[in-house]
Image (tube, rainbow, N blue to C red; front, side):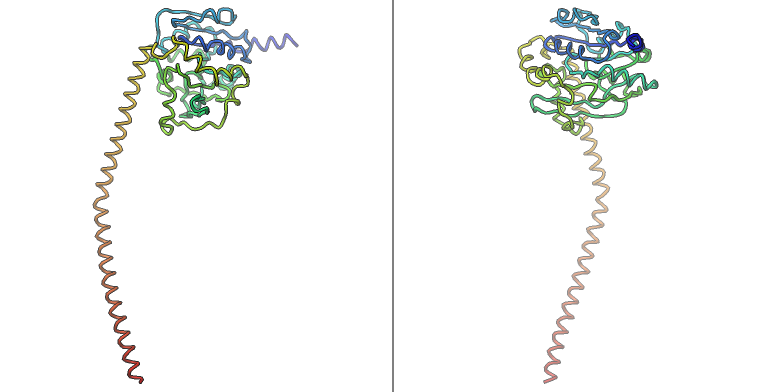
Length: 339
């Protein structure tokens, strides 16, 4: 019986879990816990960690048998870092577990199951994500957006996908668009409950609070779930929901200002976004003017018809009043005659 069980395990795909990190020491003990609670057999996993931070985390992970830790003094943008990670992977399937997100215990097993049962797809991910905002004490849902869309933090893909795509080394954020070739690569959706839970925090590279500024445009609504649907472990729940932001407050290396190149991209992205919004606004205003101008002759004609109708009604009212007067006068005359 034991032999069969071991034999079945050896048939499972070997998985490379990939984690890029930069000055995220406070998160790592909880990231480790997320990794250790995975239900997928640990002897079928390697954990690739690429670290280019000024506060290296080798001391926290070096005793975990699955870890292959690589430190680089050169500071890299996320696109380049993810490309580098892929060169270290031996797995048939590559699965991302980013350093500041919570991953349910089925994260690996669910992704492997979906990919093996759907051989026509090379990649899986989730377009729907749930984000907990400490400032609101509330869980929000972002997306889903479209079938082939997914955030990189939920990616799971067959290694052969790398034969047809890679990241742009110069992308520091929203890197998935390039990797998915403008969301044209067929992607199968994962169950969000088994994939990820995101927490908005002070050290986010991109401030997630901005999602709440324009909920309609970002497809952000109150979640139908709560944190308990994702996290069962009380220690993990305590950290992510209660302790995280106060711990980060005192961890200076992780502050966003320590990522100058990324911040330049964020500013550029926001400028481009605002430009798109202004252009769209101008286009809508122009369209409205065209519609208004097209409608002017119609409105004028309607107004003329209305006045004509009112004039006719006024004439009829005068005629009716004259007739009523005549009837009254004749009625009076008739009374006199009868007398």
